[in-house]
Image (cartoon, rainbow, N blue to C red):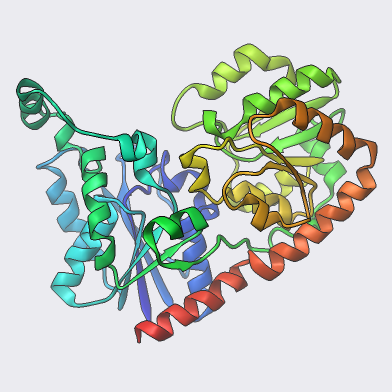
Length: 391
């Protein structure tokens, strides 16, 4: 059985940013475990470096033309590269799902849709409306870079939600998305062999990354306002313990938000550069605590934070907020606080460091929970059931 995973954005600011660490690559690795042949097909930008995952998972990159009608040429090239018996569209977008449906019309091969974000939540969610004046409509249609010439423009994201029922199967990774779109719950899985704390020396990692003098709160992701890092930084101000630092790995590919954090709270922040996915366990090994301080907004409710299972697999104490599926994912194996509550974060950090042995014991329980429920093997079991039903 060959599966083609179709990705609308494989660029260095999209799924390609974290290499093998994000959802489409996790799907590929889990499908390999049930002996599927895999190809990943998607759009990149001309300036992007060649993306590779492993020798047995080829990645076919098509340079994407940014605007209609030129985009149709890119789409035609991508469609020719989809050769799987099953088409697995990653994200509810025209550049992935719509093209996958078109390929099904051509070939009669089944389409699975994977939804890992509520795409419209970035544009106001249910409140989004496109109501231009006649003059603005003309600009949006006729200007070479007009809004309606963008393949994944929010209006098209809203329209494509009406086509969800056309998928032969839907997979998603949060209960928020399941309630909204239906489908089969398929949580993100971690490679718990690669992310095995017994393979790494935490003290050596802290020394290597210049962190040996600090108690490290690690955020191994891209900063964005809804991810709650400001709440952690306010908590650090309240604690005023100079050896506790928030370590941000990789920075933001989207905007200058991490620079804004540095300008205001630079004394509490250490930035580490973007790190290849295969080296992330060594980086996470340097953490004393992994922080996942999501705020309670639709964009966060729809997400399964990958940094959560980074910390769980590496047996790290985890401090997170009660947002979305986080309480269900962690169970009793982490420390939960209310969202947007720096005071609770400060108090909980005090508890963690006052009895760090207990915190470490919770971390080991979190690893066991990750192995049982949030590993690539756990993903593979669910995917096998899905494929058996399709065939």
